[in-house]
Amino acid sequence: MKSPLVLYKESFSGLSRPVWLLSLVMLINRAGTMVIPFLTIYLTSELQFTKFEAGMVMSVFGIGSVIGSMLGGYLSEMVGYFKVMFVSLFLSGFGFYSLLWADTFNEVAIQIFFLSIISESFRPAAQVAIGAYSKPENRLMSISLLRLAINLGFACGPFIGGLIAQGAGYNGLFIVDGTTCIAASIFFLIILSPKKVPVKDKDDDLAAAIGDNRTPIKDKTYLAFLFFTMLTAVVFMHLFSVFPVYLKEVWLLEEHQVGLLMGLNGLIIVIYEMPLVAKLSNAKKYRPLNIIAIGVFMIGVSFLVFNIIGWIGVLIISTLFVTFGEILFMPFSNTWAINWAPKARSGRYMSWFTMVYSVAHIVSPSMGMGIVEKFGFTELWYLLGFLCLLSSLGFLSLKKSKNVKLVELHSEAMT
Image (cartoon, rainbow, N blue to C red; front, side, top):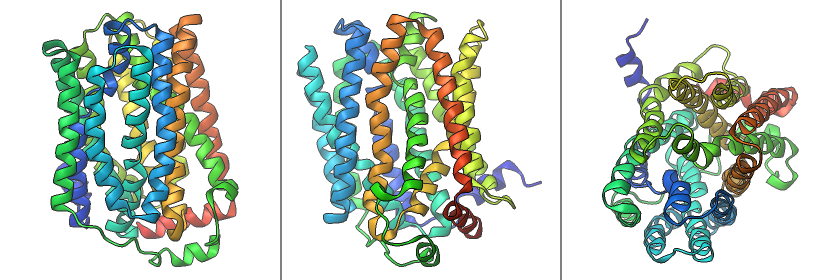
């Protein structure tokens, strides 16, 4: 048995310098992303919006995210992922500043809409960057490193954000968030340089077997994969919309306590994701869809436990389930999508992948807040559990496809 420290060290080996630098940029940016976890609380408590109005604002964020995801993917193919990432980071900073002057529903909705278009265009470009900066055999671990940086920032960001919101108010939060985005963009420009995305690499044999002329809209297997990913994302996004309100109204937690609990999610991921992903990807029978299905099921359980356990310790239990579910679902589904995409169309394929999360941003807040207002939290948790069960079974059903088997065998060979 290898010591945890040795396993942790080995999981980082072989990653390229640009991947490390990109992860550092993401760490700076994510540490400053303090607004989103508190946005629904800000809208309902500070601006006195109803839960439905707050949900609508979050849905507007989702609509902008859809546009931004599609725009970012196609622009990455047209002008390059590097320019897209820089402009997105830089302008996002001013987008957060703009929230200082928005206080009516229409003003907030408009500002959030344009902010989400700008900020979400970064995500598909970052996915393409991973393909450019990493080797196929290191792609899964490169994604995990990127997620580690994101979650390390998320571990401290919400907690710091909660303290800022209580001490300096939400205006102070917007200023800090905007400043870190601009700082991340400048840092990105200084330390990284663009690298051409390889159209031909070690995935050539796989591409030839599946077909290089595929497009997302005509790729039935990929569309099914995206649908089940979207169902899971709809459930998961409740963690950033309904869940903070649930913690404040039902468990009477203060903002800094909400931030501390959500920061625990990021801290666990920082400690466990890299070695756990490395261990699973090196298993003799590496089957990503099995791992993804288990992760989705655990996310569903994380919400169902609220209807089973009435003790405050359920908050920790739920956090553990959703965190390890996220560890199993996110990096493996992300890698599966990258491995599936034809290299010449990686930008648009990854834009569709990030777009399903944007659709979840539209559906999740308004659906969740609407159900809570009409029926209550209990009914919502049952629904989320059912959606995750459906999605988990859906991912398992994809294993019957011949091309999916080729991808999984190829992924196994790459580890």
